Image (tube, rainbow, N blue to C red; front, side, top):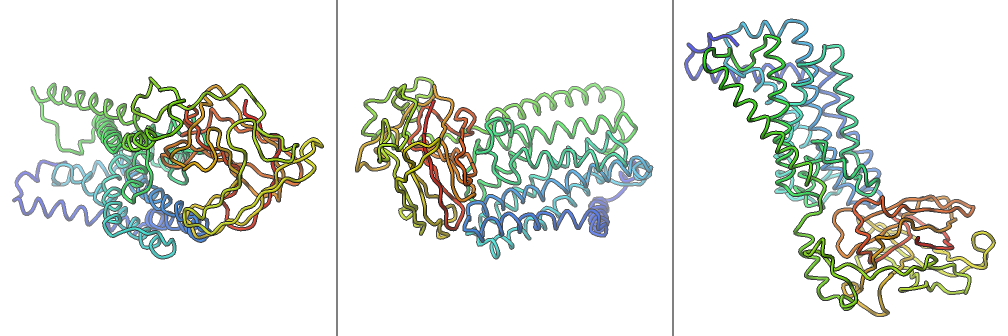
Length: 506
């Protein structure tokens, strides 16, 4: 910017900063194409998914997750579009060149844009919190709400830096398309719209590459929901992204003649500035790598708690010790070579090892679901029998689930925390035949310690017998060396009916 501001008094310099912030804020509020989608889209999506598909269907857990996720969705837009699209147009139309001739303090343009983005995020997050507390029935305290608000307001900075870099590269006409190509895929792949832990192991492992993933985890931690990775990892990744893209954008703009931080000093200051810039880039890259490497790891404190519990496992004497993870629960008993678990042809729900299939409701967790199972004639491929499971999933719990469950390493009348585990690390597939009422059902595989969302696999039970093959090795968040329970059941409120036959693990 112009050096004319150097003759201003301190009060006038501060007034210049405040005036520029007010100008940018009013300008963006009076731009419906920016203000309306930025403020209303997160509310619209939260109403659809967090309220209608979450709270009103008894799934309060997803309503809480959606609050953190769509809070990030509303945080990304002001940074990416507010910087990326606006900067590209102002650079192309010559407005940015004109602003440099004005007697403005150094960095006033960037500060005004950043403050405007923060104000929009604060408004968006506040409206989401109000909707979640009323229509979403999310039990969130004032302290958690303020924590989430602070996380999102500060969390807009990485997206401001990315938007700044995009605006320094592309034309005004191309900027909206380029920003959308970043905005929407990032929202999907980082778990902003819905959890990806149980969807795909590959997506789960790649999620830390996206800044939005780290901000989602910080948001989940703010509202008391399960998270992956540590706070330090997420903060490191977001800090690194902010510094890295800011430096890249400023270098790009400087090469085009735009000095947003004021005129460059000549002489010996130039080499020093380059050294500092390269050093900061190196630090930023290191922070990003650190955050990405640990951004999807289970939290250590949960593992430690699990260790103390599993130390009392009555079957631990028969379990091997996992040398690769000495601080974690012991490795389960090696799975037998037997492939067939149960075919139900003998008129029993017993399995070839472990405890047989048993119907389990959610009343011990405070739920009101019902479930029953019985052996019926006429299984898959004209076999003699099958196991039919019927019931009704209630709405008393935020995350209900009932199903026919199999304990691979346990004994009758044994408490849950005393049951052993099974090592299925050499198994690849759980398969069975299913038929039913056409609804979607879920296979849940549990470890002794559940970090975040348990490993799940969905399937549809139609009127005809159909084989279901669950790729165990691809289930995100599943430790196959320590499998405690396998359950096939329902989690959608309402009546259900399905049957299974010929259950195998191979």
